[in-house]
Amino acid sequence: MIKTFHQAVIDLVKNIPRGRVATYGRIAALVGSPRAARQVVRTLHSSSAKEGLSWHRVVNAQGRIALPPGEGGELQRAMLEKEGIVFSEDGGIDLHRYL
Image (cartoon, rainbow, N blue to C red; front, side):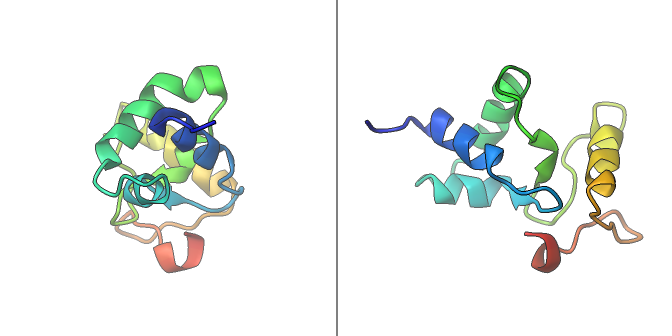
């Protein structure tokens, strides 16, 4: 059976280990649609709660939290820090270390 893009994203996000992150673009590329990072965002937004996804482990290509302050960014950072991810002074994550 061929997986849909949506299901493939869900499966990948479920397998991001604790203390690691992935980028929207990398997930899109791994499921065969390298230009579909925004669709990964849509999948996470629509399916995280019902699928129990570790949405907080997905960041943008610069290693930054994409959610704005007051809309979940603080929660995402707190969840990542609880898993041992260290942020730089300017709020970035070292992708070479945590990807």
